[in-house]
Length: 240
Length: 240
Image (tube, rainbow over all chains, first blue to last red; front, top):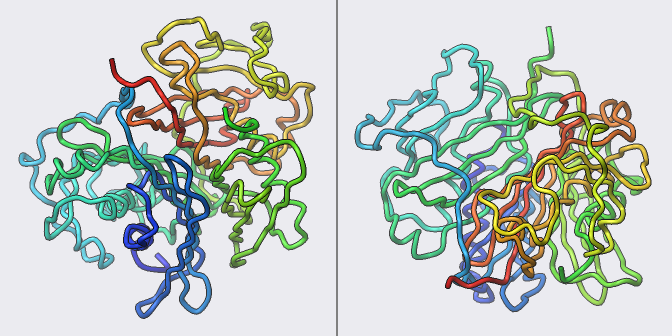
């Protein structure tokens, strides 16, 4: 609300690491702290490989634009076949092609870059208060493009602050810190291609001006692509 | 498994910020990346306030011991009265005083520093494979002491890697990255004092050598103190 879509910042930082010739293998995790608003214009990303172990590589990053605007840490690493299981369950959802893409109000520019097919709680600023914050939808890039780690990172931040869903009204709010864990290996991402992603998000607690927010991104074949967690600042309302 | 209890590292980094005269208000979030094992002996923590906004303050930190051993980012900030709700639900649990503290095997030293009253899945290395990873228990410091933000941060990491619960056997594993969101304000922490905390943790996905792990820490009065998320590396087993 005080800067551009946070997802593009996360994706841009991740891509800076992928473009760094020192990088090892693929992303496992990234945490971005949104220090102050980023404005249209030049910026600089500094990347520092803190340490490269046998399987994992740690990074620290900063995005600078008239001072530091974002800080981040990331872990890249090798994946290898091990025992595997998914305990989380994808939310119940009809097939994406049975739901029409939503016609959204032109609230913020980044909404135009995604195709949203809402299953639970369409993005509707006049919906009124809701008893819970869970939103479930099929989402993908618009125009469509094959999934990669950077676009997956951005997709993890396509949920508006849950305080707005709960209150059914616009609330000044913004992400303070965002973490994405990448569960998908490169083969799964390649196989997913440009198909819609089943995404769901909810909050655990809101209060004292802050809320957490948790998202899961699933393929239509019930594979967990990524999970994300964020801390969101919100300005109001004060209790009546 | 290759260093000390990660929780003490998180608590020590957080305390370094609380001891820094430049710090504003109380912790909101901390993310620690475990770069390499920390060994008994001297270490240095460097703290840098990246930016102080009106309500929030961003920090970057490093813990150095023969090179960088951990990196972290943290957000401190003011809390103020706003609309509030908790969507997460505490797990069903009998009162702490109806459960005897567990007599644990002397696997790792840090286990001695906590009192565990297990509700679901006692820590038993011979329990055999389990159908899910959820562990629920009452936990507090031993010897008991009033809760504070640093001890809360450490308590968020008192769950052993879920791969060991699922397989019912020892597996070489360790935390790669850990994030804690502090939902409790200072009044709630003070009121909680030294009473047991209701803690629950589970995994969403395990595979390719990595797993996530999510925990919630509740007061006995059903207030959410903190949530935590971590990415865990595990070495084996390979599929048979």
